[in-house]
Each structure stands twice: as structure tokens, then as C-alpha cells.
Length: 271
Image (cartoon, rainbow, N blue to C red; front, side):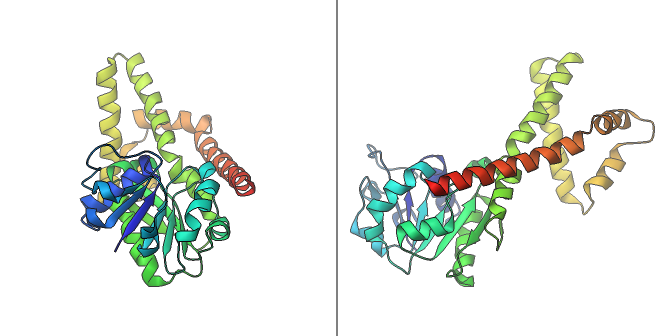
């Protein structure tokens, strides 16, 4: 299987590293189209000869094309690469807000997979939600999901519009986690810990909580009950969360993020 990554920023490099680290694709079978010329011996062991700054006939010989350019750069890219594409190729897009139909229209190919990854893909712990055009068959979906899973885990959805919800939940989600962690660190410092001690307390608490939650088949509500004894310290904190409607605020925030994702997607499509 031969792949070309168009756009070699954070996501392009993440996929290249994931494919190679998992031994899913050999370095010699990865090609890169990038604005910037390679001045060393390539990256991740990819041969320097596999890097291009302009479209080449080699594109037509490849199995999968990965679009990892910025959404605002897609129109210009599409104009230059469209003549080199063929109808048998799979196109995997990680461009936010660029719809399957728009990719079809501008590239004149029909086997399109659109995905929404998040930032932990950079360390192989990502969460990606993806959807596909009707022209993509089950075998091809399986191949693409295996590629995506080299960067973490994934969920396939039939409804493309759910990618907006994925943006609101898992795409933006790491920022919400960091926000909550930051508040806990602030509280720890106010209670007497120094900065490094506070960070260790909070970081390890988050990591341990996720690990134990994944180790047993208990719901989050059941875990809360295990930690929060009647009249205890945890209950005191949870009562504040309830009184200040933290749960409702979080749900409201997710809906706001989803609405903004829809709005931005509409704008990108018009562009």
C-alpha cells in the first residue's frame, strides 16, 4: 500500500510517524507533498526522493491520498493536484469543516473519508471520528480505520454531520480537561502546595482515574459513589458542583461548541 500525505504540518507528521512506528506502512511507501523543501535526508526515515513541493505523476500511482493541509489552503491545492488523481484512489481528509461533497466537487474523485482527530493523536493516544462517502466499500473503510488507529482509537459514523459534534466533544475536549486541571492546580496551591507538587497531585489523579475507570465495567456514577461517602469531603465538593450547576454548564458548553463547528463548517464550504 502506497500513501501520499499532502501537507506536512503537525497532523501530516503525526500520521507518517504512526504508520511507520506501527509498521503498517514502510518508509519507502510514504510520499509527501509539502510547501517546504526537504533539506535533510527526509523525516522518520522516509527517503528524501519521496518528498515533493509540486504535484507529480507519481500521485496517480498511489493507493491513498491524505489531505492534511489547512482548510483555507484546500482550494489552491485541489486545483494543482486534481489532474493527477484517479477514481480508484481513497482520499482521507483531516481538514476541519471541509465537507465530503466539497472534496468530491473540487478533486473530481468520489471515495472520500472525512475525519476529526484530536491533539493526543500526536502521541498515539488520539480519538478520531470519521465518516465516508457511499462510494467507499467495507473493505476500504477497514483499511482506512487501521491507518487511523495507528494514532489512537476511532469511531465510524454514517452521518457526516456528527463530525461537528465530534469536534465539540473529542476535538475540543482536551482543552476542557486542561481547564479543569488548571482549576484544581490553582486550588491546590491556595491550600498550601507549591506549584510542582500541585501539578503532580492533579496530573496523577487524572491519569489514575482514567486508568481505573478503563479497568472495570463500572459507570461514572458508580465510581462517584465509591469515592464519595455520605457526609464526607468528596460530597462537600460535589454539592458545590450541584449548587452552581456545573453539570448543566458543561452540557451547555458542548452545545455551544457544536453550534460553532456547524457555523464554521458552513463558512468553510462557502469559501
